Amino acid sequence: MIVFDLQSTGRSGLATLPSIQQVLDLEGVRRGEPAVLAGARNLGRTVRWMHVADRPRSGELLLVVDGALPPDGVRWLEDVAATGVAGVVIGCATVLPEAVVHAAQRLELPLVRLQREIQVPGVTEAVLALVAEGRLAESRRCEEIHRRFTELARAGAGALTVVSHAAAMARCPVVLENTAHQVIAFAPADADPGLIAGWELRSRQIAVSGQTGWDSTGWLVTGVGAGAVEWGRLLVRCPEPGTAHVVLAERAAGVIALDLLAHKDEDSRSRAQQALLTSLLTGDLLSAEFAARARALGVPLDESVLVAVVIRGLGDRAGDLLRDLACLHAVLDDGSLGVLLALRPDDDVHGLLVRLAEAVRRRAPVIVAASEPVTSVKDARKALVEAQQVAAAASGGRWDAPYVKLRDLGLHGLMYLLRDDPRVQAHVERELGPLLRPGHADLIATLRSYVDSGGNKTDAAAATNLSRQALYDRLKRVGQLLDADLDSPRVRASLHAALCAHDAIGHP
Image (cartoon, rainbow, N blue to C red):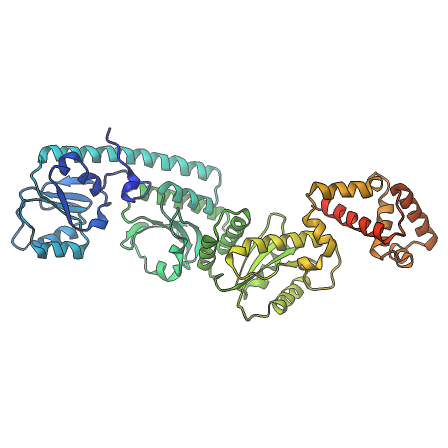
């Protein structure tokens, strides 16, 4: 078996047929001392056959064995290149005309001169054996592609998952766009995420005929849709697609169409934002890729002031209020609406948040939590996590401000952030243990009102709707259970911290 390294030619992971470089590396060809005169950067082109004649077909490697070129060598070379030939190997001991070499350079056509004679039958046989082995491997790869995407279809995989699998199998970037040429999903496969910078303009210049086609800019394109309904296109970045690339693109597009059909009543752009923010929170995206994908969705994050907002208790019913804002938004795991605002440096952040919060709270008495502004995309995840924590910690409280920030939560917010610390949990048990037993809920409520009032028994009685004597009796009982002097400010401060921590620990 002939084993060759696909990655050495810089080609896609689906490449199975040999490249021109691999042909030149064959022992029989090396004996001819091949000299690359033009098209060196295209030596990775796939060789579908070796042709010993002057009229090859697309993808074939033309071998001119006698070294004799037609009188008009330039015109001949241009005609050969027009057929889509992979490259030309000329066996001759003399120097080729400069005009022919310059023509090959202009056409970016690999032109190789053999400086010594070769055994043509043996070389041809070796190349064709390499091609045959590649075709067998290609067939196996196509079978693997069919199997993988059948499994994804059965599992009901979403578009983002399908795109990720396609890019991983092809080892090249894959883009899913809608009919407005906005990126719905993108998997870079180790390529520069900036590949989709200015995507809408670039995409509109990529045109192919038929359901599936290849554009000379290096994109294999296939339509995504069902019947007469077109949802968008799937684009695979491959300089020279083979059969496996086409099979992969079409199978991936088919599975994506099933997913879109199952969610036909949902906006594809909203689903893309959902996937993007979810990937940000899970840490699956680097900041550069996140910024590139957000930009492709029409939300530029670079040179922006970023503020994360979480609206707890309203789901996506506030989504229409965000239409005029540069932002990404998605429903988070707990049902809250997460929003990442991209503001200009001179925008009134506080004023905008107040207007947004007031508009939201006119619909329902919900919690609107906001992070501190950040100026780097690298801090976007931190801001969104902060807003989530503030929203969770603020739930159940009463807030006079339109929106809540971490600094507004005070001790309660601090204890929420520390709720998983064993030392904080131990403090709660140590300070409140006897009150946490069944049947003491009224005593805990009384103690809470008392410490919240700063030890003012009149205010505590009013807050609990108790008479002063009833309050005194309860506080006396609390003091006995806890073996604590409730008149001591130090004791009340410690109990206040314990109550805040207990609330945070029991918070969903």
